[in-house]
Image 1 (cartoon, rainbow, N blue to C red):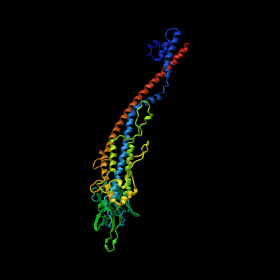
Image 2 (cartoon, helix red, strand yellow):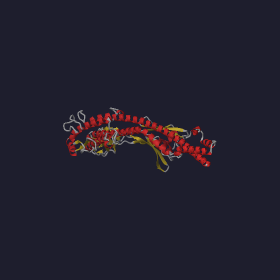
Image 3 (tube, helix red, strand yellow):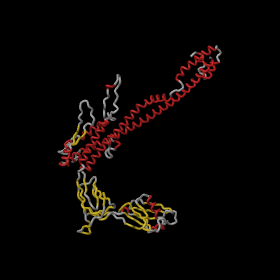
Image 4 (tube, one colour):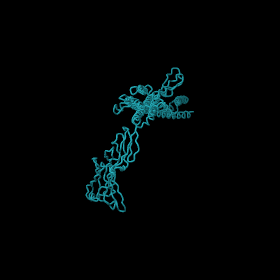
Length: 527
C-alpha cells in the first residue's frame, strides 16, 4: 500500500473514504489512488465476513482436548485396576465361604428327624445325638381387656386436659407411655395412640355384638417376659376401662431327657447346642402314666450328603479365581510388523489391568501352592487333592496358537472322588479340615484370606492387601479426577477467549467489507 495510506491507518473507515475523495489532485490521479486502496483492502477481505466460527472453535476444541489424554488414560487405568481387584476379592470371598460351608454343613453336617409336638432345625455346632423331648405347655401371650362399653367412640376420661397411660411389659425397664388429650379417651382413640408407639403391645377394639365393645391389649412377647401392667393418671378413665386379665401369660414347659425346662418363647435355641426347637403342640399323655407326657425322640444324625457338592463348588470357585486373575494379567504382544519406520510399539488395548502387579502375582502363586500342596501330616491316605481325583489340568496349545484359558485349573475324576468319600470319609475330612492340630487345606488358605482379604479378628479388612491396594487406587483416581476438572476448566476458559477474538475479527471483517463496498461505489461515481 502507498505510504500515503499509512498516514490515516488509524482513522475510522468513513473518514478515510472522505479523505481520499477530498484530496486536491487531478481526477485521474484520485481515481488511481482510490483503486489502489480498494485493491489493497480487498486482498485482505478475501477472508470475508462470513467466518465459520463454529467450525474454527470445534477444531480448536479438538486440539485443546488433547491435553486431557494423559489424565484420561490414567483414569481408565485406575478404574480398570479397581474393577479387577473388586472381582478378585469377590472370587476369594467365594472360596472362603465355600470352605466354611464345607466345615459346617459338609463334613460336620447333621440332619434331624420329623416330630409331631415340635419341629427341630440343626445348624452350626449341632452334633449327632439322640434326645427325648416332651412338650407340657406352650408359651402364650398376656392379654388384658377392658369392661364392656356401649360405644367405641364415647369419651371415657375426666374433663382434665390431659392424662398419661403407661404400660410396663416384663422387666424391660422401657414402659410404653401414651399421652391422651381430653378428646382422646374413647376406645378407638386409646387403641390408635397405643399402636402409634409401635412398642411391644398391640391394641384393638373388638365388637361383641350390637353396642358391645371392649379394648383388648396383647403383648407381643410370649410368656412371663411379656407380662403387662397398665396404669393411668386419670382415675375416671381407669374406672371406666376396668382393665383385667383376659389370658394370663404362660411360659413354655418342655421335658428334655426327663428334666423340666421353662422358656418364655415357643422358639427355643439355647437348649441343645446347634439345634432350634419350634414348639407346635402339647405332647400326648403317657398311656402308662397319665400324669406324665409321652416323649418323642429327636434324632440328630450325621449327614455328609453335601460334601461332594461342596467340593465341586470349591473346584469351580478356584477355577473362577484363576480365570479372573488370568484376565487381569493378560498380555498381548504388539504387532511389530505393522509399524512404520521409526514408530515405537505401544501396549495392546486388551492387556490386563493388573498386568505387572506384584501383589496379584504373589497371591496367585501362593494360592496355587496351597491347593496343590502336600498334607502328609494330616493323614497317610490322602496327602494331596490329586489322591482324591482332583488334579491340575493344563490346556494343550499347539505351536503358533495362543493360550485361551487359565493356567493350572482343577478337574475332578468323579469316580475316584466318590470312592474316596465312600471308603475313607474321615481321611478326606482330615485333608480339607486338618486333624490333631495339623492344618489342612482350609487352615492354610485361611492364612491367605486373612492376609489379602483381612479378617475382623486377625486383621481388619481395611488392612488386608487387596483393600490397601484399592484404597491407594481410589485416592489416585480422586486426585486425577480433580486434575481433569482443572484442565477442562482451563480449556473452557481458553475457548471463551477464542470465541470473543473470532467475534471481534468477524465484526472487523464486516466493517472492512462495508468500507470496500463504499469505496467501490465512490470509484464508480468518479467514472
